[in-house]
Length: 419
Image 1 (cartoon, rainbow, N blue to C red):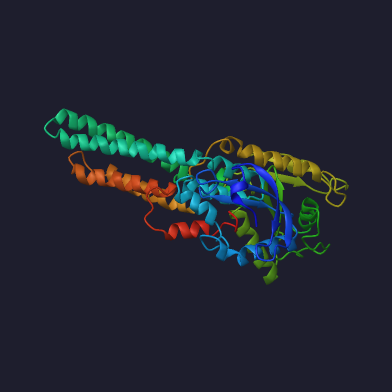
Image 2: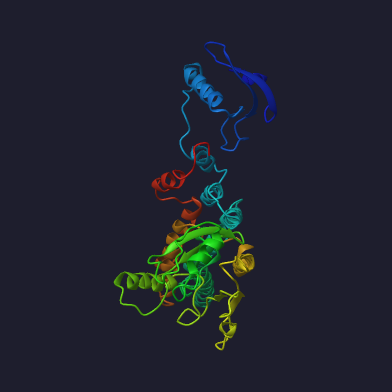
């Protein structure tokens, strides 16, 4: 199709691509040759920048298939994630960088993009390397205790020093894993990856379904003047402040003998308990209240609902859903609140961005807890083994001490073909 020996490495050149068997012209393309060690994967790579029509791409791929016997090694289509896996296996990327790339390729919101970029470029790997170095340093101190076992004073000082380091490390991991944080206080990583949920709830026929339709600019929910129309939770999503915000229209809360409506209200209560934005009264006082006073265009409108006596943080809007008044302000303020809520965390490199990270770190914490439970006269070899195991688990996060190739298959199977 073209002569590689004529290509200057790492320079984009124009070439005519011909079928190797029939010499038919397939395309006028741009080619870039990357020698071994200078490509994304580390392998020798030839990039073909084609005119992107389906016919051109199909015929060029067919020509490559027809010409596979002409090459030193048979040609085949790349598997999903194969280029990135080769880059990992050749030491050009660690596993956290691979996972961050996958997250970036699938990012749908600005928050997801920022999260992936903060975790990539080796930043997250450096965090894990620093933690692993601290554990290895502690192991070295324990080995020194074995070497100087006849020096009681040295033993006591080294044991106390190592124990203090492990306590600090355990405290840091507990904070990153949010082991002591109520489940309703969602982390930045959780909000970026899964979005923020907002419940629209209140009494029947106050305009919740109409509000949902106005917020998302489409008819997502059925609107009726009859109370109790909404029986199930209706969801619709949009991006606000860089985050995916999912609005949930819920059944109105009132006394009723209608069994179906009662089921709807039960779902409303269940929805409220799991949301990031919810009612002030109750056990979730860490989450702010958002109050929209509707029907400001009617004679029945009053601002008394905006008066708060509990001191609980809240936003209060006055709007007319029927006339689309005040909706833009609601969206603007909600987007501002969401972005400001996670602004500080969004500037930092997160330690945990995958379920795999969390599972391994929980095992690390378990090893540290076992170590900390040991008395001062414990067997040093046994104590050092707990730190060694913890260091190995940290190495598994970045891929430096993988215990199973099944992990690699699971990670790279999510990639698209071509990456």
